[in-house]
Image (cartoon, rainbow, N blue to C red):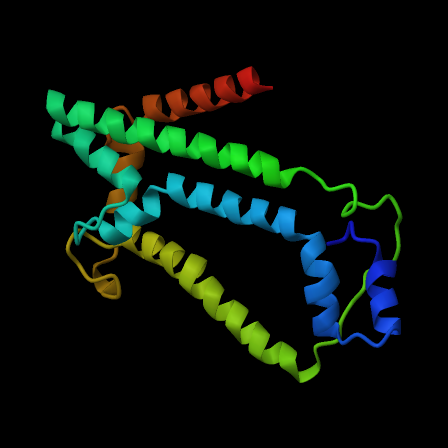
Length: 203
């Protein structure tokens, strides 16, 4: 939105357009492609998510694609391995399609991007800002805060113990993962090696 020439919005206001009309008729059409690109980026990140779905849905056997692949691999049979490969291949193809669409929608439109610099076109929301603040806070708590707090509390509580039963909290899980879990250090090394290698190859 900072790339939009503020003169476009200011001209509409000088002609008597209301702030909502300016947004729907001028700003929104100009940011449509980047907005779709952002939505697709969030969708792609959500598809690849594993930790939070595994922690929140694993106990009730609620699976997403990534946790389904992991569950099939844990089974250890040849059939389950083949099924996991099919799931992974399908997820890979779908992700590539999303990336291609993202690439298409993410291209900068010459009419949107402006080489001019100017002050931002701000709108005073007045008393309307407080309901918006509350709405944003609720969304943040539900989408980010609650899963993060659940993961952190789960790491301090023992298996099968309520998350809010702080009397039984301990660092046993952390100690096991950091110092006793087999192949933990090699897993970290392999992850960093694969990430650096893939990034270097892509660059």
